[in-house]
Image 1: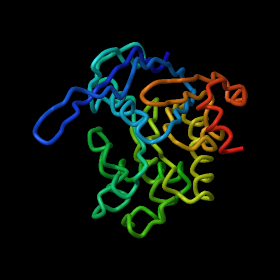
Image 2: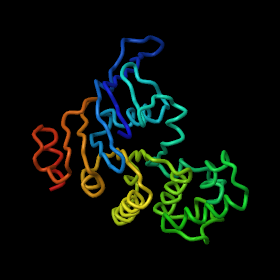
Image 3: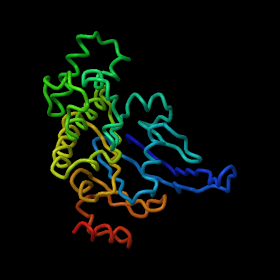
Image 4: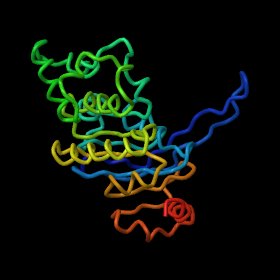
Length: 247
């Protein structure tokens, strides 16, 4: 088992000015698992708790109840060495004053690689995401949205993680560019042996990339599909409604 999420609950205080009025539970007894080499999609509308779950998995927040294990371990430091993330907003995910070389090599600064070795590693990473050495000294504003998201993916795989959390990672891109980036993610999954948790509100991208699907609504998993080929067999009315939109 690569990732195991078990009975996770998370609440936030409801505030009215300076006063707090109880709590709102945004994740309600969430449990699922991801095997090595698997891509699991989480689909649901905005505010359903998808991104909150992502923050808990990354160790950016703590759950009120339940546990998250990665390779049978619960230590946050261990998580961070093996897990990486690609966010929706690629522009705010990078420093606009940094060149591509500095952006991608940022996580490599904690390694024992020399400056030349880091440069060579960045060139290799650029090639893996379909870019070449010509991009290495460009600034973010000199790149298209698709190119910049590829740079973010290159940075995410720089430390050879086993698992990528993709939080609406293609949602801000044009449809044609989405397909290109999804193709890239598919290839990386196969070549690098990666596993993904793909968080989105777009069912089409889920069917393109994922092996399994979890339907989220109001902080709950309301339906699980263990094989993407069985997607049309959903039973829940909310899942059926989502499916109809994309048929």
